[in-house]
Length: 295
Image (cartoon, rainbow, N blue to C red; front, side):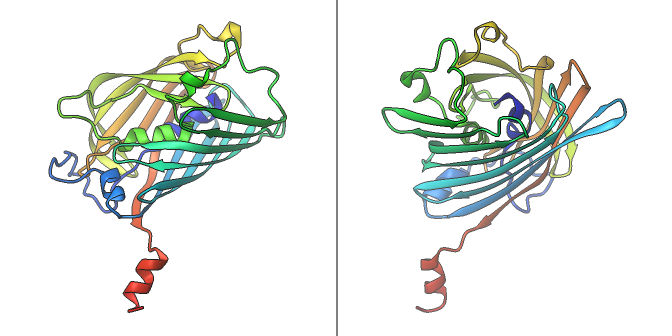
């Protein structure tokens, strides 16, 4: 999970066609997930780019997310391709897929599949979470499931990494609540992690996908279960000095979207991730198509 976190953690959602000046959420507008539950089947396309430098050689990364949300279920397909980000210096290519249930205020994981193609273990993980249990298979198998391993009770409170971070951007914040929200609870089949967010005020942000006054959040990591014993007491992300800084764009639809993430690493300096593509579009169902054709 640590290798995909910097890219996956900005997997937020933006409203198609919104003005850069329209940064204040509208209390009259229904939340994104409420609209989906009401029947507005929606596809979201999101892309995130990262860049750093190693001895003046660019280290780059890109994550592409394709999310289809229907009134009862959702499906996310993602590809994360990285060269030399944070604490690894190899080409890294991961295909991720998640599916589960759409609710009025969240997405909830049922199945998660990750296929790592890094030229080493090339591990495939298949995770299923039900109402009262979970199962996981890995090929090749993990040497162990950590000390201690995650329990059923702990896993049932989590989502897979990409679902957790997509729903984080969509979940409505109660009036007066901390806009940073959290904690974000992640489980990738082995490692169970909580990401705690602390509000650090606001800052003017200008990236490809959005411009305006964003909410600054600082993220620290709690390794709950599934880690090696000598790593379980580390409260930060591997290779990162200090908190991970994330800026959320408050959108007119009530979503709070991560549009920029920045970290100071102990090997290659500052790593910056920016949202470069964010939009919604309606999904035309076969039933709707028939009705529009007069069938």
